[in-house]
Length: 123
Image 1 (cartoon, one colour):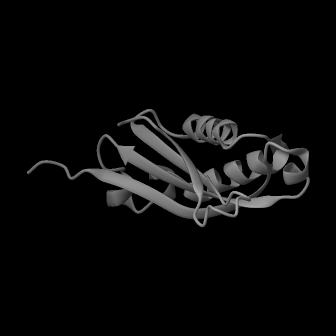
Image 2: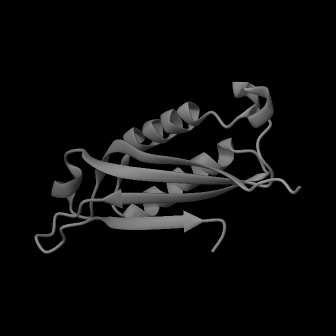
């Protein structure tokens, strides 16, 4: 029997960030939502060992993202998304592929949903 495909999704990570093109929009923090999806070449050893050392510590990933979001202001969601992606990628094992989506609620009367930017190591 072949190994099952394995992935880990961390959703609804809400981070306060100074984000916006105009200085007024960046003057106060606004929430952005981040979603991570990790795809593994093969299931992590933690599936058998039940040991955090054999898993991706998503608590650590969230703290890393939170610190980065608070560290400075960003004008564009694309720039914020790339910074969050790079920081997450740096913390992951090589055998793991990453997709990251960052969403914000734009201050546009006509937009009832979110503006979302995604970077992924697969199509």
